[in-house]
Image (cartoon, rainbow, N blue to C red; front, top):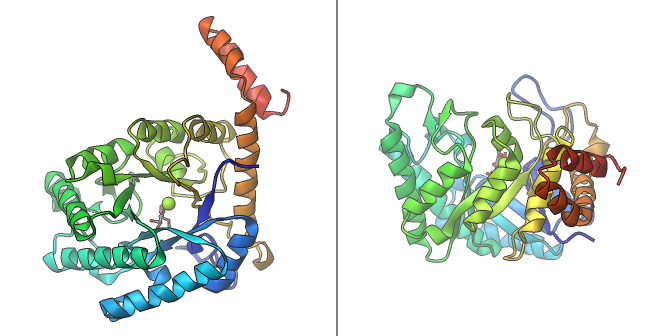
Length: 344
Ligand code: 3MF
Ligand code: MG
């Protein structure tokens, strides 16, 4: 029995279209997806603002809230919670050069409008967490904007969100690049620095995605640990990644089993979830996956997580301490490998 609760976003089940080719699977309705998510064992849904309210740019504030209430009723029907809402600024023609740090004032105003609406939607869905994946915040052309100005823009955008709703929490999902060339908030260290500069650092934390840490050349378990040391890990996006290349969002643990184990172990050791945090997945099916298997990568990720949780529960800390006292790290490494290979 897992100690954790799990969450997933509707975009994690998708038609297989990518930048190089069209869809390979059928689209599935939102309701069908969340019904299956509940059956598979997820407790909460992650939302983009326009997953909850499609076409929101053309709706009034009251119409947006009314649409969000319909989604809340669907969640209730399947016994699901909403975990967070993320303004999907990267898809919009207003924000092709970023939102909060766009060089155009009207784009920055649009980004704030979407952020405030995301907070309204979160409230209607019954959650208090906003995730900012800062997809296009940074520079495509290094000389186009000052990184000093851009960083200050981000801090003041977050301050405005904190003012708009006195109890909302803001969670930055750092990523070093893609689709932007140079991002402004590339790692958990950046997130903590931005958090500290806001008017209410307690309400500003991070969402660590395994693949994003790997793209920055870092170990996701250490990024998780760094955030947890400061009570700043508000959620996670677990997945996997084959080296420093495009963002792959592979099923959790399929490339780097020991790294995956250490992510589970650091979460377990430090009581992740005790404040209601979810273990969130952000995984994509392969392009070759069939319609029938549209959810298999999610089931696989959950099963791998739970199997690694069971290994982490059995991790022999007395042996670890004995080996550490002798500085027998060769022995400790081999013990860990034996545990993972099913030899312990
Ligand atoms: C991109 C991501 C995103 C975000 C999601 C929530 C599509 O690399 O990880 O997933 O996690 O949009 O903000
Ligand atoms: Mg993510």
